[in-house]
Image 1 (tube, rainbow, N blue to C red):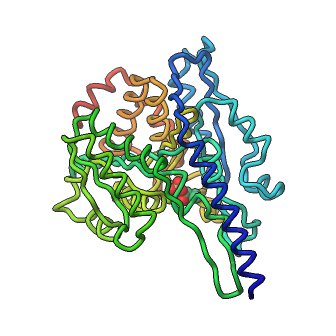
Image 2: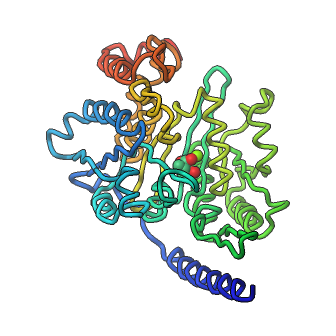
Length: 396
Ligand code: IPM
Ligand code: MG
C-alpha cells in the first residue's frame, strides 16, 4: 500500500511541476496572428473519421466554390491533411501522429471533420481524444460556439475554456489502488483570465451588457472558485457589463426555460461545463448536427462540427445521410475569423435560408431524408442566386 501511495505522490509531483512550468509559459504575452498579412493563407482540411470524410467532402466543395478567385490567384491554399484517422492513430498509439501534427502546424487555420474518441473497453486502444490533444498542442484556448433560434429570439454565444479544467490532465489520472481512482482538474489564473477577457471583450464590442459565467463554485471550491474570482476581476474592468453568475446545474435547466432563454446572451465556462451546455444548446437549436464550433488560439485556429464521428451511422451504412450543416457553420466562423466577412455573411445567409426558413431539402440522418450531397448542392444553388440577399431579407 505505501508503495502505491509513493507512486501516486511521484505522479502528482511530476504533474505539479509540469503545470507550474506551463503557468510560466502562459505568462508570456503572445500577439495575435494577423491573417491579412499572410500570403498565401493556408487552410488545412482534416477529414477525420466516421462520418467525417463524408461531410468534409461537401464542406470542401462549398469552400472551394466560395474562395474560387482567391485560390486561383494563389492567395489561399486549401490543403488536405491526411492521416488523422482512428486506424492510423491506433496504429501509432498516439492521439495525433507526429507527422500529422507537423503538417497541421504548417497551416494557419484548419477545418476539421469529427474524429473518434476511444474510451475504455472500445475495440481501439484507449488513446486521448485527437480534439483534446490538438487544442492543447496548438493552444486553442477559446472554444466559441454560437446558437441562434430566431423564432425564440435566442442569440447565444458560448466561450468555453478549451485547454484546462478536467480535460488538461484527463488522460493523466491515477488508479492509486484497484479501488481508488483520482483525476485532476486544473484552472490557472492566466488560463481563466484569457477566456473570460475574450468573452467580455466580445460583449463590449457588440454592445451586450451581460456575461453569464457558469461554474459549480459552491462545491468545487479551488478551481471553480478561482474561475469565478477571475471573472469578478475581469468584470470590474467593464463597469457597463454585468457579471451574471450561475451554477452549471441550474443553468442547464434555465436554458430550456421559455421565460428566460432569450435573456441570456454570452456565456463563459470552464471546459467540461462548456462542453455539456453547448451540446444542450445545440440540441435546443435543432440538433448537434446544426452547430459549428471554433477553437481559437493566438497563432492557430481550428473550426469543426460540434458533434462526434457518429460511428453508429457508419455501422448502419447511413453516412451519406449525415448532415454537413455543422461543418458549414464552422466555415462561416472560419471565414469571419480570417477576415473574409462578406463571404462569411453570404454563406451564413444561404445556410439560414436552407436550414431555417425555406427548408426545401430536409436531412434526417436516414433514408427518409436527403443525402448530404443533395443538401450541399442545395446550398451551392442558393449561393449562386443573384436574389440571395432579397430572399434572406424576405425571411428575416
Ligand atoms: C466537443 C467534443 C469533444 C469534447 C470530444 C470529442 C472530446 O464533445 O468538441 O465538444 O469533449 O470537447
Ligand atoms: Mg462536446
